[in-house]
Length: 288
Image (tube, rainbow, N blue to C red; front, side, top):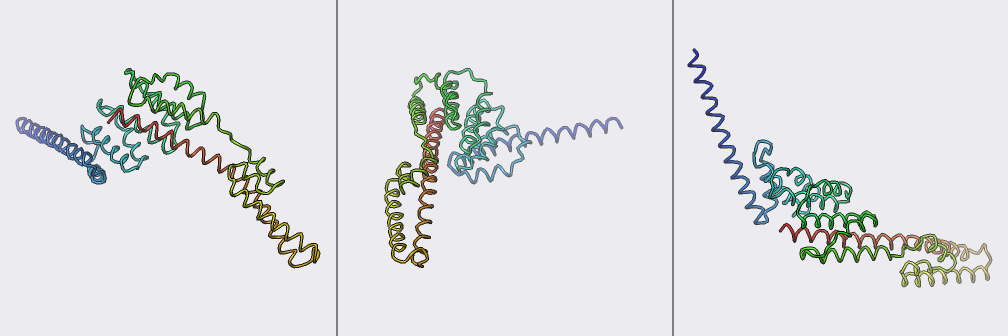
């Protein structure tokens, strides 16, 4: 009886070891094939393959997660890319790249605080990586409008790394643009257009629209006055043109206020795009 039990245990161990070896072999082959798909820019196929793999069962899970994240990143599916990148924890060849790109993906999608946490908690000893982190954090500071933090991080720029020295210079230039940007006042724009129709839009930099508003409101005002002078306030023409004048005048004031807000938003959007571009290029230069 004892010999039968021992034989049964040995048989179970044999199949367990055999199954583990097959699993490891399968994992290695799947990672290799997934890497082939990514190398050939077949990102949709790579993601499809990753969905068939039960990652928790594989010793090469970091490689699979990295390749999955890289595929999502190249397909501009940045939220899913960040999710996969953040799960890479043990592979020394892809760990830092995954964390830096996860942070970038989050920052690009507006989650700058999470991006900051990812990079600030990294333990970095290599000077190149430390300065790359400072470059990224300086960019994140600009995205948040935190100029003091930008000054802190940019103070460590050495401009000695060809991979991102030019981008550091551009970030400094963007910082200067933000500091010197004239925000302008929506209230003042409204008041100016109330006094002189279209003046508020000219103040917001919309000179053509300002001139157009001036003539439109002016002409309607002149016609309204002429109708009033000839037929009085109860004249149907006076009522119609007075209504049109009131609408155009009010729209001119509101439009001037909106133009200043649009002016600010347009500047912010352009600046953010420049920042994201100049923190993205260093990552591609360093890690590719």
